[in-house]
Image (cartoon, rainbow, N blue to C red; front, side, top):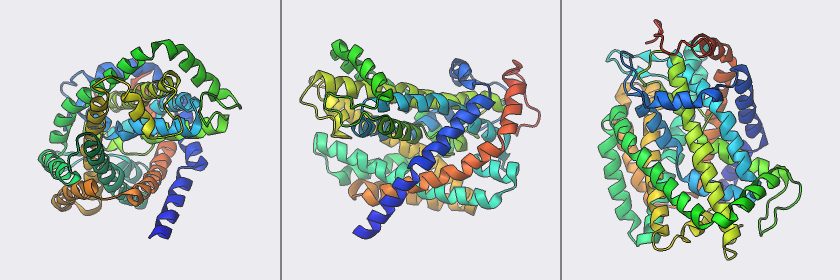
Length: 453
């Protein structure tokens, strides 16, 4: 088993190495240029996300779809993943993580647009969409759509379920001494009570949970930055100079070389915001919207909140805390964030525990919908009840087992998900550009698309 685990880890590392980084980042830059920098309209997207699209068709509100996507995207990677990038790539990794988010907005925009453009309505009025439908309807590549769904379903049970449940049970045990078995049972019950209601139940819960957890975590970060205020200037300088310097950063950081900062910063940013992976457009397709561009703008704000805001805040917290507290070892990776939060008197550990718990639980809810739609595409609506039972059981199993092997399998499946989705994005970029020119750059965002399901 150790040999198998080593091989799987090696494959996962290769899948998330330079070729995948170049492919994803290249797509981000290509779409940014071809779509004439849709990032300029990010605040329009934020406004639309909280505006009800009266008279449009769909299963959930635009905010509900965004909240579900954010629930799946904002996870433990935003807390411990950024710290790992800093430990391995130095402070400059924070800058490259941020840049990845800025360019990734265009890819998330393109995914959201295709999700609406090629969605279908079932006999009972439910909306279905995502990369599998763009591949099938837009490119006539059903075989690739099937592959995408297989990869998505496998990845979901790993990174979207068991590893999140494991993170929850471990942090609760370390902070409060509560048995992982009890945490697993309670989490499984809570998950069952939500997923049984499908996308509407998930969206309703995420619409409450996501703003709470994001606000709670951001406030915690701001408190730490307030304590570290004398070091913020040096933090900013160190992040910027390390991003472009061939020399070590100093201050105990082991990174510092440009390629190290670039690799780990970009990889963490790509993995964190999921732009290009093809997951978020699955729920974007369920949104109530009058045309594809409106939902595309709303979808793009997910990357903005996830990486441009939350990951950047975490990066500043980690780097400034290393500078402020010499006893923090900057090579500790995932433990860096925990050590930074424990510097908040009395409540630091609680803030981090609640943040990790809510981030992980929301990820389980968001990915449950992705997996459900992938499995429904493969086996039809009759498979959903069996899937939901397996999903709830997996939450408990993940809470009580060591999941290093599962994490590596999920990493590899995530990368494999991205390939069919990126093919759809690149080959259908002309469709994306045409819709964008028609509705966005000609100021027709309020128009209804008569061809929209």
